[in-house]
Image 1: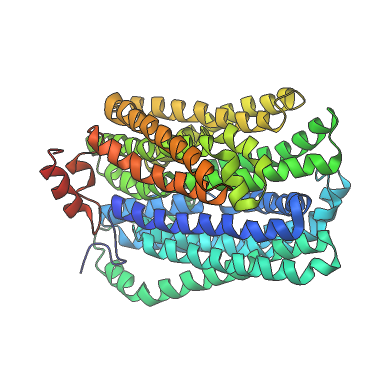
Image 2: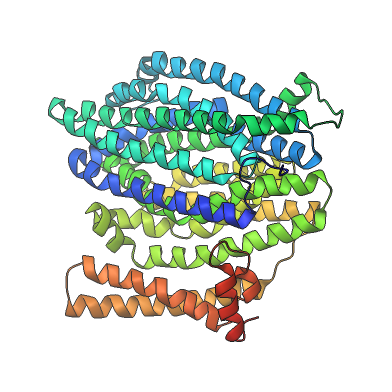
Length: 536
């Protein structure tokens, strides 16, 4: 019997699995917004965005930190051979999520009218959408407990499959419902789009329940072999689950509240300088729904790595292997930066072209260009926050994030009614993660140390990014002259960047054989090739 019954993967394997999943999810998320935007327009997208923010707020209050909390405890207990407590922690979390998910679903459904009347939601057209999306909170909360179990067992496949099913059904249902309801008016069509999240949430929950039940017997066999005699009390386990979950949920709540405040600030402050209410909502839709779609795709690897590193760090922290933690965190940060730098440069250079290509809205490139730099700092934040969570220090990245949020809201308030306009909100978002990522690194350095190789983490990838940027601009300008239009020049430029950057990075010595050797499937072959090139 293996120590971990549920198909455990390494950090790099788990990261790769989750990254592929997240990229597919984010691409689907960006793609479906194209026909949706063309159906309901900027104003409809602005209406559609508001219920999503309140769903996210209520979900994060109830259960956003549960996957990390359950994963941390399960991973720690499995590493120590306390299998019975690992299963008990999951079961208690699942019961809590059933209750809390139901409560907050009902709360959002019944409270939608009050949110409109109180003025917290400045757009009455969002009422139906908030009611339509309310049931998703219940299913997402239950799903959170199951994902925490599989993440703690370092089985990222189950997590990835459930996310893919959820997103695929969301895309299909969102487009279908909004299309069918469009003749009834823009507000109802936007509510139909919000309702599209329900089938995917149900399907993801059912999938994880089935996966768990299919492998429960093997896990129960491990429980029978638990002769450690260690039994943590129910109250102690609950305290540990929620002491980890609450800070993470609080951070997510803070981000959700920030988005809601951002919505009101942007709409109100833009109207001070002459925008109509409809124009202000359209600007917000370009920022929140269009520009952010590209950012979300670009941080997919860091998001996956942040999730994968939590149980690995928790496992090492349980046995006090601090040197291993130091090396894992340093390597993860380096990988995140190496992938984030070219992504940020590409989004900045081709911002208007990309939003025109995907959303047929070139003006959305204005907030995208301003946001581009956030890819680097958000990536570092995600990885370092995951490491701190794995060490049981979840409150630290929350405190750091809140400091950044306070500065961001001040920037949005004071600088939106200036020539910066919507770019002020984008710059504020960048500032959040500049602050939080730096403070997270400082905290990790104090706890376990932090090995920072400036040359291989920043300098060499930076040089490769500059070479890539030059090639991207040259190809785009050439294609624009010889082919014309926007589609093909933009696609040629993107492909050029994807080819030139890794070649330049390898040529400069930014990637060595040891960096890729542990990658699943292709790692050993790529490492052998690099060794032949003298990159050992």
